[in-house]
Every structure is written in structure tokens, then in C-alpha cells.
Length: 334
Image 1 (cartoon, rainbow, N blue to C red):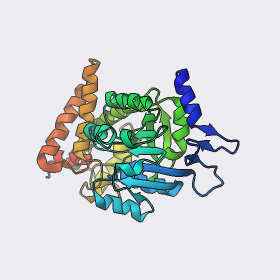
Image 2 (cartoon, helix red, strand yellow):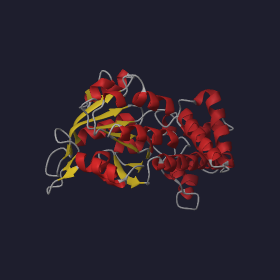
Image 3 (cartoon, helix red, strand yellow):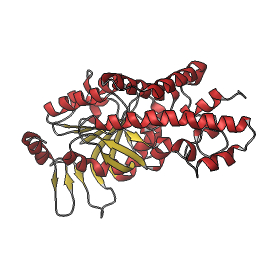
Image 4 (tube, rainbow, N blue to C red):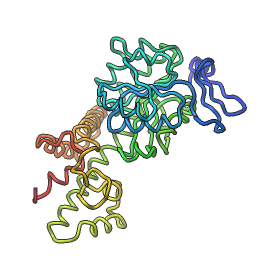
């Protein structure tokens, strides 16, 4: 970290002997564990989809004041019913010391931060921005530069753990940004996640997420193929899954999020693939990974094939359904 940036952090963040991490001399203070709420002042969350919605609910449990915004008013109402405060527009976030965004794609992130009336235009000096969307590393590095020019702070912190992790507050945050600043946002992120991993420089959180998701996409296809083959050859699906989960085929796509209906309760495959991580979102992430690979001339043949299979799933009308629907797409019985 340069001396200028160190001075910026020192001016905004101060820690007391009682472990108070002060982000602003007026309203921004991370409180000691002796108080009811671990994060004081106002924090904001923008984007209340399958992931952002439950994240906001968990944030309410730990934060003194959580203001939320989404174009889907039903999602806003759910968060408000749990104690969040509705923002009528982005301008209502002007007093938030920390703002987290969880949005679908590059264009949404760019608009929320840099568009007319966006966060960069309405926020105060010293605001901390955290983008947990899955977007291009190039984009977040650009946004971080803009934030620094405004004497504010920007971190990319995409997540892993799926909708179950979001609901249970056990997400993994992959955080890109200066380590000194990362330590200051840990109390807020800990209200929504269990594992907070510093990945190094700004943009590296997105690098980690894209690599993670390409492996996830490929492993889900492998589990779906294996489960389908086992079914066609006559083995009980639960028995096969139990063998996978105690053998070398073990992976998250099998033991936690199995795509075969009836194998696991409470996962999208057991509710017609509704309410999970959509096929189109996975396609978007694979596209970002392929684009990044092309930029450094790294071949990604399995990722390209996975992208084609999820494109097929989407073309068959499954774009909004959970990506585990690839099991159904590959099934001879459908």
C-alpha cells in the first residue's frame, strides 16, 4: 500500500482499546462484542435476489441499521419485514458508511456505481464500497480506481456457498483489496459469511470466483452424467450418491447440492430446480471465465464445453431454473 493510501485509511479507520473499529468520526463504528449489534451506523445492500435477499436478512441481525434497494419490490418487502429499511432511490444511501452490491452482471454494476445518480456521485468521502457480484476483474479494478480518486474505498468480494449458504450465513467471501482495509470490513461481512478469504490485490476476488465457478459448472455436469448413467443401469440414486460422497467422486455438487431429484431434501433439485443459481447466471460466469482466459491465452476446453451444455439448457427454456437442471437436460427419461 502506498503512503498516501495508508494515510487515507488512517484518517478514516481508528481502533480503540475496546476493539472499536471506527470508519467515520460521526456514525460509522464497529462495536465491541458486549453490545447487541456488532456493526453500528448505517450499512446498505443493493440487489436482493436469491443471494442478496438472505444476505440482507442476516446483516439485519448484526447491523444497527440496514438500508436496502432492489427493482423488485417484493424482494424489498421481504427484507423490510425482517427489519431492513427501504431505500426509495440510490440517493438514500448517501449516509451509509459501507455499501454492498450484489447484482447480476457488468452492466448493472457499472450503472449503479457510475451511472447518473449512481453511488459514486451521491456518496461521501470515506465511504466503503463492496461489490459481491460476479463480474469482470477488469471492471472492478476500474471502479476501485474511481473510488480511490474520490478518497473512498472499494473491494471486490464475490461469494460462494449458494442460496443455502446465503440463508445460513455461511458464505465464503473472496476478497480483493488492500489487507489493511479488508480487516476493517470483516465485522460486516462476518454477519453474512463464515469464511472470509483475502485474495490479494483488487480484482483477485473476482479471479478466484471465476475459477471456482468454472470448476463448479464442470463438476455439476459430471455428477449429473454419473447419476443419470447409474439410474439407467438400475442402481438406486440415493445409494449411488452415498457412494460418490464417501469415494473419489465426492464434491459439493454431489454431497451438498445433488442435481438428482429426491436425493437430498431442501435443495433446488427437490423442488423442480426452483430458487437456486440460475442457468443463465452460470452461463454469464462461464462467459467471463472464457473471456479472461482468452485475455491471457489460457486454453479452457472443458469450460467451453460446459458453456455449450448450459447454453443448450437455457435454449430449452431453463434459463431461470437452477443450474442443476443439467441433470434433467441429460436424462433419457425427460
